Length: 410
Image (cartoon, rainbow, N blue to C red; front, side):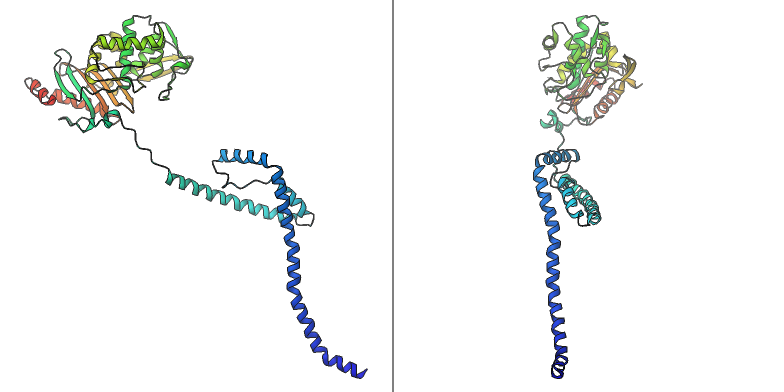
């Protein structure tokens, strides 16, 4: 016994060392085993999530597409919402007492996801802004034809200009006067002239219909569908404020209808000797309505002979009653309000293909002048061109008129 006890005591340090070494070696194995058990939880959750996702794939796709369309983000950038898969995962883990921890993790994940979406959305917008091509400004027909490269002594901004003495027919200024270009709302001069000369009842009521809505340029109008005004009021607004729906309604209600009206527009142009002129509709929204400065000067001279054309085109403003409302319309040509001008008839026009256009009959230094400006480059440059011509004519001496006119024509 003593020998056995002595042997055990002698071997005790070695036994303790072996036991300690076994514990050290067993710890990683136990930790690895425990880790494997912990991994099973998210694997089970992922399996539940995958099964639930497949089960609701069709519905989930529709919802994801709807969210993408609403937010403007792509499907890849958007974080999927909590569905049946997440609920199944929470239920599976919650039985083991980890429900609170999972909820906290989900909140943190959602917060992180929102930040990720904001950053991703901002990055996408920045990339789109950089990659988006810059749309070039649309050139007018005159610009494409190189008409702006033609210079003149008055340094006009209009590529086409034509000024004549209404009484003597003397040409004072001529610049690209035979160029045939879109004329925009200058078209309404012919529209108004036909209505004035047709001697139709001006108190007849006309209603704006869907047919009068602009489908060419999609321009806006204060005359809503269903608005009813007299023919006189429609003509006033068409000439003064260049109201497109009013002009279209005048043509549509002409005897024989719109097609007959357009045919009469072209017949009148031929009658007046307007050889370069063609009309396809009564508003000027179509770029196919085209003419030359010389033709337009003929039209202004004839239109000036109609009292209604003079009155309606030069009135500074006009009010119309539309139901319970009163609408105030103003002249598109601010020169009619100027004390420096004595304007007998005028009309403005603009579409991108035509540029800024202006025709006027005005008295300057005791002379009745007809002015035509087409394809002006800036918003107010056509008015500035008219002012240049007025100052130039006012500065003419009594004997210098013919000489200067010849130099300008040359």
